[in-house]
Length: 69
Image (cartoon, rainbow, N blue to C red; front, side, top):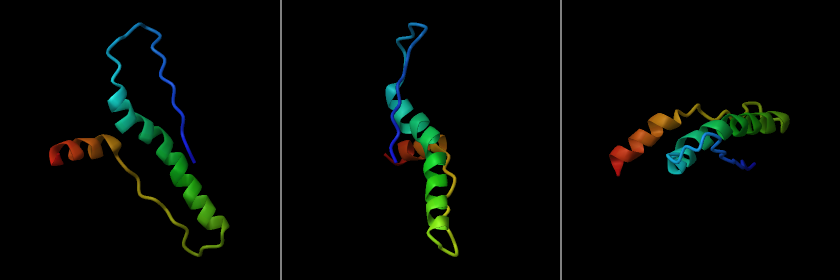
């Protein structure tokens, strides 16, 4: 599974934070779909206990990663 994102600046705002979008927003948008896909795939494959990926707070994860580095 892959996600392709396109950022459009309709208001002429030159302060778009592409790095932040790639670290926080894009993963937060695509992750629920990946999570559901993994669950459905393992359930349809006949696993008695399908794999359920944990919910991730990407904003919190990003701030924790900044404090580590």
